[in-house]
Image 1: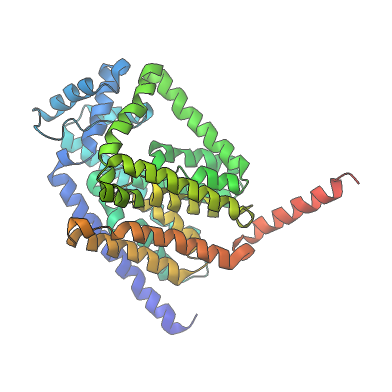
Image 2: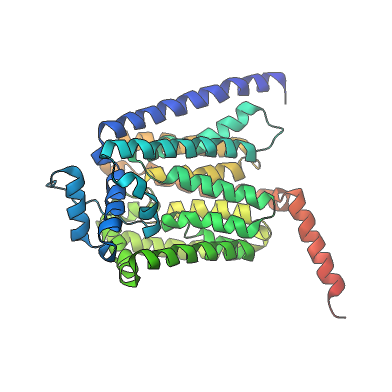
Length: 405
């Protein structure tokens, strides 16, 4: 790389970090100014209900009673904000449940900021080491702390922890620890809509050990849920989720939200999501040869497809595009950076446009998926790390020598 380009990247890296920090500060100020509007309120509600009445964990009236006690009053609209995460999440939040709302929020935000900082460092380390530091920082920041992704701090949402788990899974795959990577990837099942198409992508890549780890992690979520709240409440959880998500489908950042707006029905978004999911499955079957032996690429494609085609994805969930940036950038740095910046630009423009026209973010999200897929197709087997290519070749040679004549 020429000295002029290195100088350019040395300036771009700090500039990208400064813009990201500014976006995060705006969100943090908003959250601390209005704790009631953040998602920490239902989180605290879930933690208290688990302590007081675990047998009715997902009963709306019980959650409403606890939420009113936390607030000190009963709101006239948008009440209650239900807790819809797995019981283990409520159990993990119990140390904060006895604190005042703002104090608990500050503690959770500190955890999320630490996870975000760790994610930035991990994303930077996953990128090619021969790149200038500034280039790695720009790629990591553009995906991890985009304008929509920064809202995860304003809402006190789980995205920083989820992206840290996903990037950790990529790091484990580089050490050939596939089952452990799958277990870590199962953390994303807190919000299954962010990972629903990752599983068929891993199957298309024949990454059975990763899927085994995901299955083990899913079993952990189910087992702890049954222990904490019992089978009846575990059956009540999906019903509560569905009731809430259908009504919010028009606000999704994915393409089904556009369909919902056109037809004026939240149910239409779910029908569209099913159709898009089936189309994604067909494409995955067609490209299974390219994905074989490349679980990290399959995860990145699956995350992008999950976000683009889910009926219930919000801007904060787009922080997971950092996984796509890390895998796409080594194949096509300019395309990856441009696509991540386009997501921020589309999100900002949607905030200025009239509501009927504010649908640029889903198309920018689709652009990430299509751009990454095209780069993968163009690179073919070149995108497979050398170590992985060696293992595949060795395995094929071993099978050939042991096959019966």
